[in-house]
Length: 327
Image (cartoon, rainbow, N blue to C red; front, side):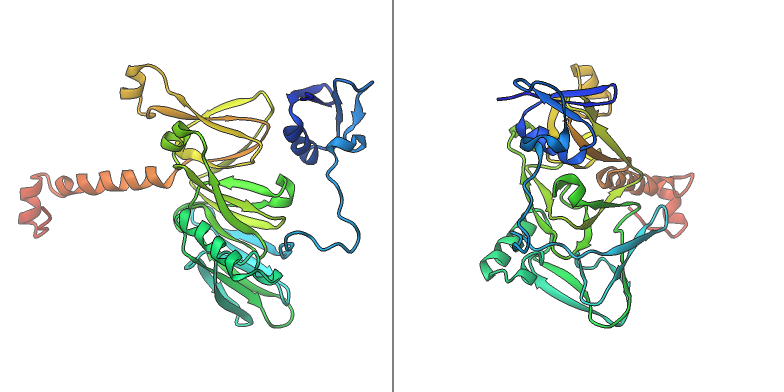
């Protein structure tokens, strides 16, 4: 298998196999590439093996292209996203995510994720799509918001807990994004919401997301929600990053996702970081969250339990005398 290398000015990346090289070239085309057997470094767009084949003029694409939508994100800690639709355009969202909409936007509940409905998808296609959503812990149904009037119209979707809404254009990531199974908020209609299986047993057991994650495919905009602040990192082919397993929000499918033991017995028992780290290896882009919902929920449960004794200097007896009969 040929090993590819890429150069951008004084920076060089590699080696990469064919799949990694094609994905890297699609995301970073403004450089030079070389592999064994080539006489010299060549501009990436001039290397046939790295250029994605173009569809013939007038050809029908294999999957329906997503609607091209505009958006604006409001807020800081408790964000919501407002999507602007032209006549005939649609957005899809999880049930209960809507905050408000214009009267000209029609709401419809459909079976599955709606990615094949506009392309004449069969009932079996819709059933498979619904089954994938059920495996990732989501509802069998998706809500579609379609602008049926004239001019511009707006619909807004709110985040379910404090954090950040991350807009991602799938066409810039090779058409696919892997994310935690409860992070999808909304998207342009035409985006497919599927499942991604962890094939390694240890990663599935201790990776923080189980064996099933969400796989978002298409060429349109998707909006992913994460807890706290979100940071994006770009990993080179040899870059490795250790992350708390609950802090991984999303990553490209070119990124290797595995788990690695924290350290010795003392570190595992008393370090407070669990038994395993998530191990992410490039190339590709990753997104991390500072406050996983599981960590937030755990702190809330601990605070609720402590609150039973902290209501009075006399503890539970003081709460009883104050009329707060919580035992």
